[in-house]
Length: 477
Picture 1 (tube, rainbow, N blue to C red):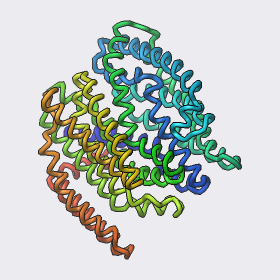
Picture 2: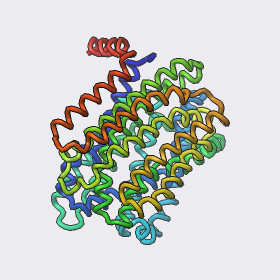
Picture 3: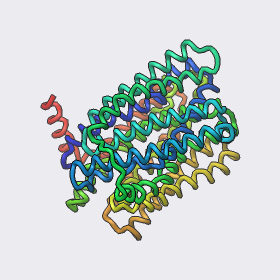
Picture 4: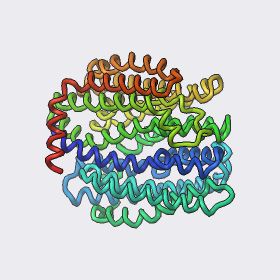
């Protein structure tokens, strides 16, 4: 992989950032599952799911074109003026949509199973998320991943500290404590984010920028919403139909599985600048080599989480929260296909044909809703997990079809990515039977053995390159 050391450097920074931003759902599990009841934990899970759904809608995705325009900028001033226009437009949309959320809070709350007062808190929570995203949109293409990582870590751990403080002093409705802690930390971070955004902001409201934003970003609204729907809709549906405690159990299993999604997000963010460089220079050979390695890493992490996810969940959370941990291996398969879809969805953004991104992700989101309606009734939480996987499979296949027959832009051939998938199938089949072994140490040894075998198969041909990279990193230390 060309620039592999640089990729690992940025990947490491983004890993810290992604791990930090997801720590409320993962690292903090031992604390929250002991300070919150199963029902309160479920309410927070649904709130986070609904908020994630509304963040893109609140600003109508007007802030999501910044990172793409960076590669089209005519000058440094031109980029700063674009950031100014994008930020002002997003602010206007946010004010309008905040009024709608506030006015219809009770009706919306009845739909998702949250009280009116909890729905009101979505407004400040979304504002914090939007400003943080603008910061990342600017600093990401600049390859200043270190700043993103640092401020993400500060934001999340400050939120964690304040949430715990609120939880310890509250006696009733303790779920408010975690939500208030996150919002309070966000308002502290806004001060720093704005200072970091300011050097790249020039007040502007140019029509040409607005046209670019509407052409690129607005079609991404269904894209952004649908990608959240696939991950969050199930817990909302389970909370409404089966109870908040069950939503909490489901969320814990999904949180453990999201270790794989961290890898997907990290590799996407860290490799994206290199992807653009390869596409512009038409260095397709290196592009394919890079993505195949990334895909193998994703599969390997997925199998590791599938193998040891239940033990990790039992180690982190109280036993009464572990009712859905058997779903972890299923979720990891979904995330593998999520990574696979990026091989083709990236091209839609590169060519600015974002309507294809919308079509792909929207189809996955709609499929998830439809499948959940049928499968949750028949199979409960298992049906929701199956819907999760099938939605990502549909999304990956559709992305491949559109890129092959409509966009017709180079992407890593599906046959090259299909081979690692085929190698992995027997390992998952063996894992299904191993998970039923009652002996803890016997099961553990077998899983470790097969994990090592899969690692050997995937990276034997790359062993010399990996050793060189490791040696260079150690020398730089």
